[in-house]
Image 1 (cartoon, rainbow, N blue to C red):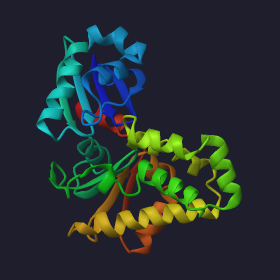
Image 2: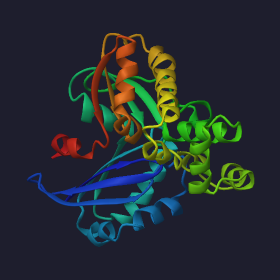
Image 3: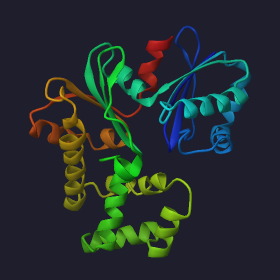
Length: 279
């Protein structure tokens, strides 16, 4: 049996398949970003899925795509965790950017972006990731990601820039108060995941002009600052992977077309497309 997984900071999507490409099971567990979590936390996050543990002994091959694994130490850290659970499996670990590239562009060149809990991008030549502007963490980067939008919602709330009705709903739903926010951001682990937890609010209030304007602002910043850093950004299709890109693709496509750029594929999760690549 083969496991194919797409791991982020918030959650991991798993697909178990046999050699005939038949899907035996679909599972979900906690996030597995080795730059965010320690070994014990990652092991516990996997253990959230009883189905994975029940089948662990039968898995012979794993193809794990994860954020944060470009660093050698982080790569080895995640591999050690997986080896401790899947003791009979050959384990292969790749970057989440490569997953997005293979799932959207296939064997063709393109600019690949992930817009989920965090955000990132790269130039893909149809086989390998050739160039990336690099990733400096959620404090400096992550434009138009879940945690970026979460930060803007909190800022607008405290700076009184939210429309009155939206502000009341935001406060009621998340029980917002300064002490709670400061504790989550500066005393508890994974502040990026905490910030991203506010992103679903945009989907719930999608028809609001305030939310629409916020989406346009985020996507405009990502396109004009991050994607514009690539020489090829006007010549190649722009492909996107992740919940933010997928859920708000109308606004994202409008920004892309406004700048005369080439829209590519937008997918929520690459796991399904990766089956064809590996099996």
